[in-house]
Image (cartoon, rainbow, N blue to C red; front, side, top):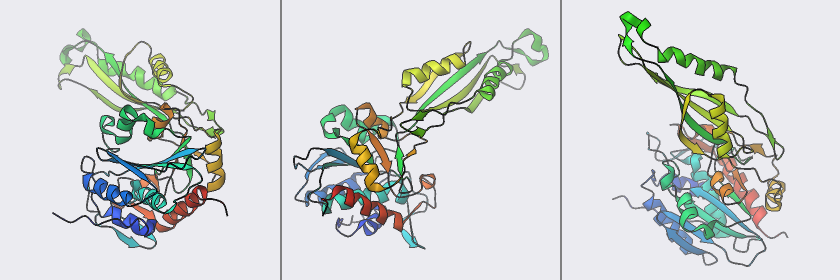
Length: 358
């Protein structure tokens, strides 16, 4: 068994990122990294540390007027020839470098070295973000220990090119069914072709005009798109069923029930089955803690096009932002990497936000 190196949380976020990348932590196999994170945090005297599965929570208890939560997931997708790390041209390459060990390294460095923050801080390093939601460590905390997630603001260190991405879109996947009746293709007039009937579903999608609502000053762009189609029985059979799978990405001013009602109305007359759904998250930029963070970081917030775990905080009434090093489009790629300058910039700006003003 390969020995897992100890983590030096005072070595700076860049060096710490390299160390984290070199500790494999594919989803369901985060235990060695969680062990290392827990051991390192337990040596930090100003933190109270608890462990829940392979999720590690560290908290300050200074009695401050505000509490903020800073979090990141420990797991990665499976390796594909991108371990160990390497540094070239100001970039750190390696599995999870962007998604999201660079962000985790920033949070760990802050946890160890900002001992008297102006806000109480809860640091959460959690398991199983990359796989099914039932195993997500953050959701398990929300289900069983919601008091640990109480905060005035949550910052997820997801890659955002070192900018602020506020809230997130919701996502809904549905199956829209066109029906018909089978017949031999030599006597097609005796049947009804479901694949042909699905043309109406596609026509409605082509004609659909997505909204571009403004929420908390940010313009979100919705989208309703076919992402799959299936049908057919055999080369000589008129099919009696055809399924068009549709993905709806909706803005945070829609609740999940409203989104489901909307797509049912769009495809009125067809059978619609909800396959998967996740709510959107409001930006929450009107909250004092969020406004102060934006001022301190010095970046104009952007809308988050996509879904992240900020939605889990929104469901608990906690405003949440995405802020971390790395380009999110590089996540899960073979050449995944994170700029060293972005790691350093995120660490410097967040340290200034948490530290007492001189």
